[in-house]
Picture 1: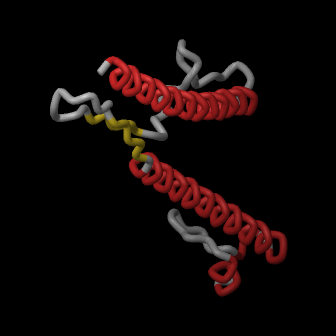
Picture 2: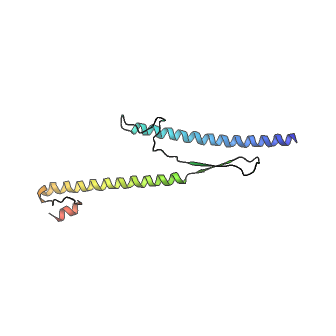
Picture 3: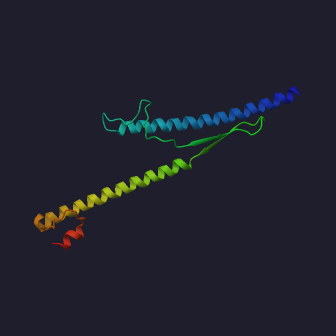
Length: 146
């Protein structure tokens, strides 16, 4: 009987050691990535402007992984299970990327419109361009009114 108990304890210790080692390595890697991202953010921020709170992280930072802990239903020797769910953060990241892409496209379109207007002014003079309070300026619009 004592040898069976000792054997069960040894197996559990070995199992927990493997799980602990694996989790510790994963946490260390995640922490390294986090500090690297924080260092890059601090380096690329404007001088004197920091968007990071007293704990050296920004209020905008959201969790990239969510952990669900489920305890065993009975009073058995089985350990609680930890499940990592990455979908919510991935969906938020996709939305952020789409927003950034839309913002870039808007800036490109505005820049293209300004270039078209400047080009038309240089070619034909300012007086020939129709003056309206609200006018969506494109190169083709300007050229048709000249």
